[in-house]
Amino acid sequence: MNVTTTAIPGVLILEPRIFEDSRGHFFESFNHTAFEKALGEPVSFVQDNQSFSRARVLRGLHYQVDRPQGKLVRAVRGSIWDVAVDIRPDSPAFGTWVACDISAENRRQLWVPAGLAHGFLVLSESAEVLYKTTDYYSPPGERCIVWNDPELAIEWPLTAEPVVSAKDQQGLSFAEAVPRVQA
Image (cartoon, rainbow, N blue to C red; front, side, top):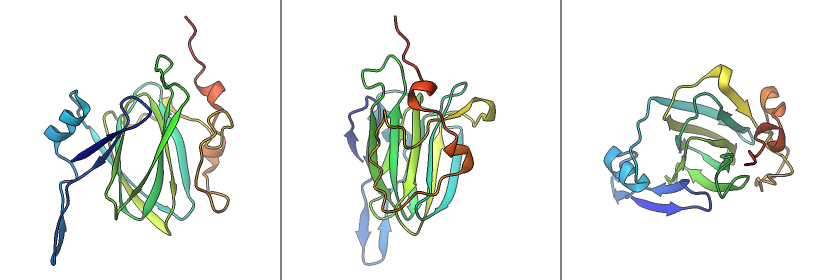
């Protein structure tokens, strides 16, 4: 597995070794030992999620305050622009974002540690996204930062207005959602 670090501490881009021949291909989409070695710490997944989205759907930026989730994200069909935003007040990367093109073709995965906000934009006609989480979904703790917050200034690769759920349109600004704790 090839592991690429990003500008946000803990956020990793993972690319599996792919074995291809005339019959097709094979790769390990997840290996617990290799994943923990890449992270440098133990991790335990408790839930697998799958979403289907049509072209230009933008989901996020989601996070949970009571049960923060680490997420290992991959696309099994189509292509997405996957975004992680550091909302950890004590992080040197607080308020920054990183993004990665993830597709069924490139087989990349993005590791988004617990304590970050996450969202994605569908770049293809549709996409199916799978992600493992380190904690369970908690509706009372669910929060959303509006996708187009000017302070974050995420460079979404938009070719037209995105399709955003009513709930996500009501997301808070970054400043409202996660004020930095001053010591």
